[in-house]
Image (cartoon, rainbow, N blue to C red; front, side, top):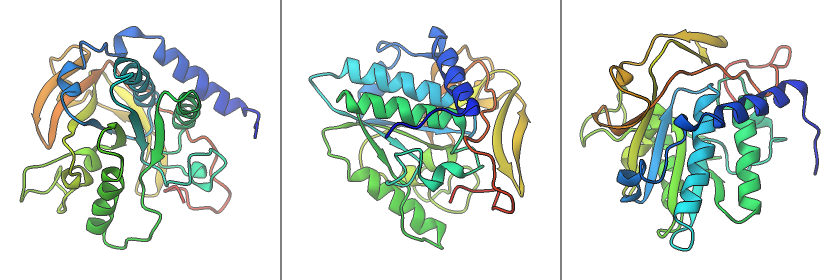
Length: 261
């Protein structure tokens, strides 16, 4: 069913298109060669930017064209399985996962799926998991349910996407992330930024655009894909900078401002 763009969401779409227009941010198949030797890419991000959803959109297009006739491409977003329509209550969230850029990405991926270029899924478990450790396992199991022959492109928060060595927690957390539970052979990639940036996320009870110092993972690195081999990530993809993408919908009066429902 057609739904007209709001002015704020239209701005998000235009920002996404402008970001995609920067060819330097969109890797070629040759640049992705080390990742194409695996069964998928698990991309970790700091939620709430314009640039990372744009990167995922370009990766989906590049992968589907490069692997056409050989492997299907499935794109997995950190959303509930039934939130692949932007009318779902999830998209009223304020924590960066439901940003204008993410809704624009969702619509672009849905259009690619309609053209049978990719398959699109959400892998956030719909069940309630009070224990975060069980939640991480459940996320991984949903990803493992994707047919083995598919190439899997996953976008999630950087903790979920990491794969620390056995027996070690991920990124300072005292639990094992979803990336370490996934059974298929994935390339774990961290999205980093080389310049001072902004991103929209929640810190405590405050949700908004936050200033960011240049990422230490991007130090002395040109934009593009580079080996990393630490903190549970095989590679780092360096973007020049991040710019904050506000929520697709404003927080309702008296509503929970922190997380997506």
